[in-house]
Length: 130
Image 1 (cartoon, rainbow, N blue to C red):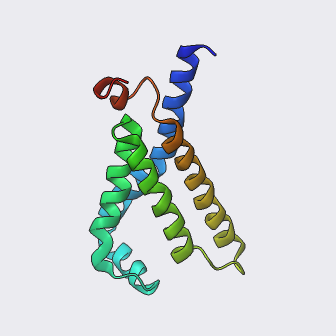
Image 2: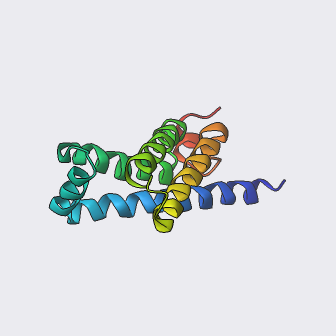
């Protein structure tokens, strides 16, 4: 397969996977108190919000840039599964069921990224030439 196509597809995949987490991390910063209240209402201590923001924003930026991609992808896969279980497990609500499945699909994408790596157009490829 064409190496330019492969590198471009890997980059586009990383952008698409990372975007939701980067936007969510910034959103939680701008609605900090409301997010803490929502977390508490779902049984998650609001004091964990800084770690959630770090996971979403830091993990998203790592995937976007292709830096320590396999580790970031594994972390975000786990994060996606845990957040699906905590926040979207109301299967009587069709919207929550769809959000649950969306999180599982993202986890699958991240596991593939962890398996195959970031690709040629990434910081991993530049810093850790293999």
